[in-house]
Image 1 (tube, rainbow, N blue to C red):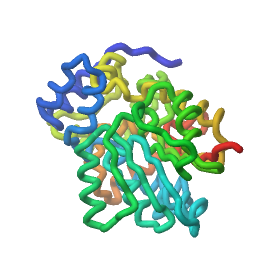
Image 2: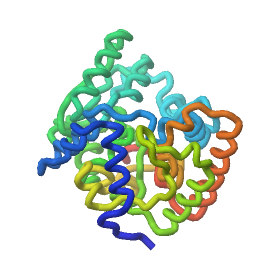
Image 3: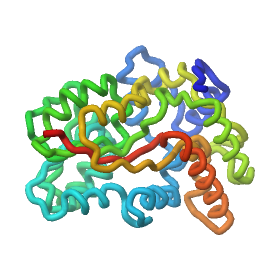
Image 4: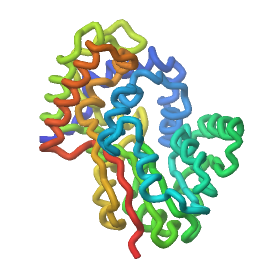
Length: 327
C-alpha cells in the first residue's frame, strides 16, 4: 500500500541536517515562490558530498557488477564497448548533465566527435569546462539553458543521455516522443541512468518497513548523521510539502519514465540496480562507509542481501538502460 504523506518527522530532521551540511543560505534559498530558483538552488549550492548513498565506492562497485558482471566496468563503458566501439563521428546530446562527470569520461573516446552538455546550473558547467580545457578535450561543449528552451535539431545526434536527470522533468512522454526521438538520427540510441520509482519518493509502507530493518543492521556508531550530533534510528519517508519546497522538480513524474520509454523506443538492454532499500538506509550516514573494513563489509553484504530479497518481488527503483529509436 502506497502512502500519501504531506509531512513527516524526516522532513524536520532532514531540514536540520541540510542546515548543518549546506548552511543557512541554502535554507533561505527555498523561501521563494519561484519553482525554478528553488530547483536551481538544489544543484548550484555546494553539497555535502558524503551524505548520499551514491558516494559509497562499495555500492558503486555493486552497480558495476549488476550491469556488466565486473566490479571495475561501469555502465557507460559497458554500453560503449557493446554499441559504439570503433564507430566514427558520433554525436551525443546529454540533458541535465550537472557536473558532466559521465560526459567528460566519454569525451576521451575518439569515436565521439561532439558531445553537447545541457544544464541550468552554470557553476557546475563552468567547472566541467575548466576540467575539459585542462585535459585538452575539444569534442565537448557546455550550454547553460533550460531543457524546455533548447532547440532540438532534427536527426542531429547518435545518442541522447539522461544521467540521473530525466526524473526531474515534467511531460516526460511528450519530451521523449516529440523532442528526443526528433533529434535522434535513424537508429539513434537513448541511454539512461535513472531513478524510476514512485513519484515524489512516496514509498509503500512495506518498503519503509524494510528500510528500517536495514537501518537496524548498522551499529549505532555508524549511524551518526553527517555534520550533526544526532543518530539515524528510523526512516519515515519524505513528505510532499518538503519535496515541493526543497525542489519542485524532484521525482516529479518518475513513475512515468519506463512506461514512456518503452512506448516510444525499442529496448536493447535494461539493468536494474536496486536502490529501494539502500538509498533510504544510507541517507545522511553514507560518509561512515566511504572507507570499508571487514566489519563494514559484512554490514554492507547484509544490506545488499536485504535489498536483493526485496527487489525479487518489487520493481527496482533505479535502472540503467539503452534503447533504440524505432525505424
